Structure formats: structure tokens, C-alpha cells
Amino acid sequence: MTEEDIRAVFINELVKIAPDLDAQDIGEDERLQDDLGLDSMDILNLVAALHKAFGVSIPEPDYPKIATTRLAVSYLQEMQA
Image (cartoon, rainbow, N blue to C red):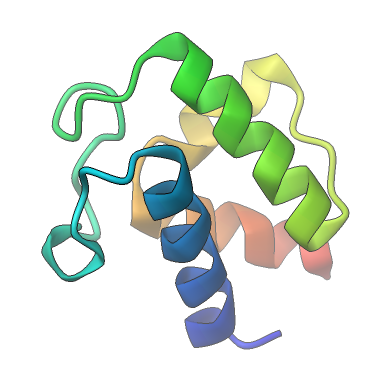
């Protein structure tokens, strides 16, 4: 998967979890909880969705590595390698 593919899947899953978000308005460095207002349950649902979409397990200590779109894309790219 290319970086753009990963970004598109991540944003798509994020918007499914938080449908009040507009995919076009999600910045690369906006923090999921602090800036976009996701709560801990939303994060768990996002982790489950990413596991299903990418086939990777994201352990709780790695949650900060998916705290923004930029970080998540980089992390997921690494996990795919």
C-alpha cells in the first residue's frame, strides 16, 4: 500500500468512528483526542478498525504513535513493511 492509500483508509475509518468529522477538514497534525475530540472508546474502536483494515495489532503502548494522521500513516507504513 502506498502512503496515500494508507492515509485514505485511515481517514475513512476515522470518519466512520466519528461521523461528525469532515474528512476534508482533518489536518495531518491534529491530535485525535485533543483537537478532534475523540474519547478513549473512539480510540479503541479506531484501533479495532485499523486492525481489521491492515491486519496489524496495535498494542496500547503504541497508541501515541497513531495520535495524528501523520503519525498513524508513518506507523502503519512501518507495520506493513
